[in-house]
Image 1 (cartoon, helix red, strand yellow):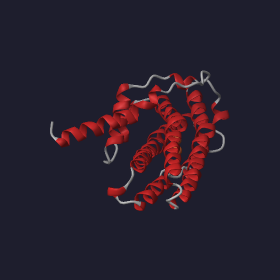
Image 2: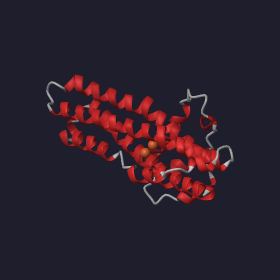
Image 3: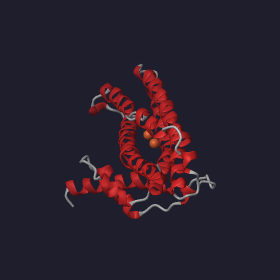
Image 4: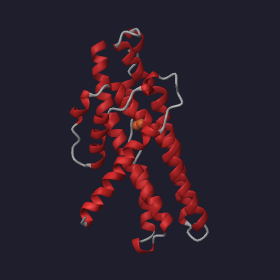
Length: 229
Ligand SMILES: [Fe+2]
Ligand SMILES: [Fe+2]
């Protein structure tokens, strides 16, 4: 096998793992019916395309999936970030800090920066889990006649969401740049490279996650709202 094919293979299996690992995390929330949806293999395939290419994503291809499926994927992703991704990155950060903190002054400010970032991300996810997603679920229930639509369509949570849904991954890029400028490739110690790799993948992950929220979930929701109004 030549190097290029081999690298492609490594990259695509990494991507595959990146996309599917959230499915292994079982929800502990048994009262949430939306958690019980099975992930569609075709949907996973499409999401994999979104992750592995920088081209314009064919959002319309996502339309054949239900809003429940999309929501379920996003919820599973949040779970992955909070229970696995953030703790892993934090652990790498602490490892670097304990090893090089004395000699590398910059690490202290990086640790502070990362900690602030983590708080921001957790707040972002909590807002979606506690305000936005519950609203989406109510609209879905109303569209099925399980809830009174007048009770659901009060205020305009969707516009609030559109206005306030800022990119949360940009600051992570900053973390990456701080640490990569700090040492050139040849001398970067392994723990730094591990950390950089984790941060880079997580940044990609969050960028794609936001695309699904803004360009798939929100349009589906707006359509559903319009059908109720
Ligand atoms: Fe989210
Ligand atoms: Fe978000």
